[in-house]
Image (cartoon, rainbow, N blue to C red):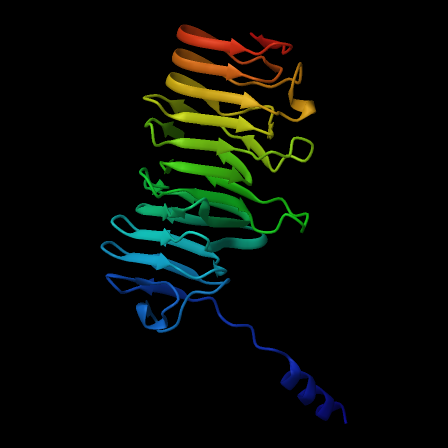
Length: 290
C-alpha cells in the first residue's frame, strides 16, 4: 500500500516549466506571434526575451510578461499604446539589459505601460523611451495591492528619453539627461498622502536645453540623486509631509540656468550651488538649502 501511495503522489506532483531564453528572429514583427521567436513559442513570465541587433519587436497586445529582457545594441522593443509588458519576478531581484532602445507609443492620452514586478535592475548603454510626437510611456508597479516593494534600478549607462512618468520606486545610479524639449520626466503621481514612488540613488538628473523634470508626490530618501540644472525646468510639488521641512535630506543641487520652481516646503543639507538662472519659492513655503 505504501508503494502505491508513493506512486500516486509522484504522479500528482505538477512539473514546473523550465525557464527558456527566447530570441526574436523577425526583422520586424509582433511579440505575440510564436513563429517570430526561437525556439518556436513566445516568452512567458518566467522566461528571458532577447531582441538582437537589427530586430524590432512590437507589443500590440495587453498583458504580456517576461522575467528578464535583453535588448541588444541595434535592437528595439516597441510597446504600443494601451498595452503593457510586465517585467521581473514577484518579490525577487532580476537584471535586464538595454543596449538598444525601448519605445513607448502614446495616442490620444493612452500610453504604453511597463510594469515593474519585484526589483528590476537595468544595465547597459541604451535608451528607455524615445523623443518625438506620439511617444509617451508609463512605468509603474505591477500590482500596488500586493504589499511587496517594487523598485526599478538604473545602473551602468542606461538613459531615459522622451515623455515618461514613473509610478514605481526608482533608484537612479546613473546620469539621466533630461536635455531636450521633448524630454518630460515625471517622478510620482498625485497621491500626496500615499506616495507611489520613493526616489533614491547616487546618480544625478541633468536638466538642460528645454528639458522638464517634475518631482511630485514622491518620497525622497535620505540620499537622493543630484539635480543639475543648466536650462529647462525642475518643478517640485506635493511632497509627502515627512519629506517637506527639516527631514535630513541630502540632495546636491546645482543651478546655472533654467528655472528651479519649488512649490512645496523643502529642506536639504546637500551642497547648493547657484551661478545663474532662477530659483522660485512659492508663497507660504519654506526652503532651507545648506
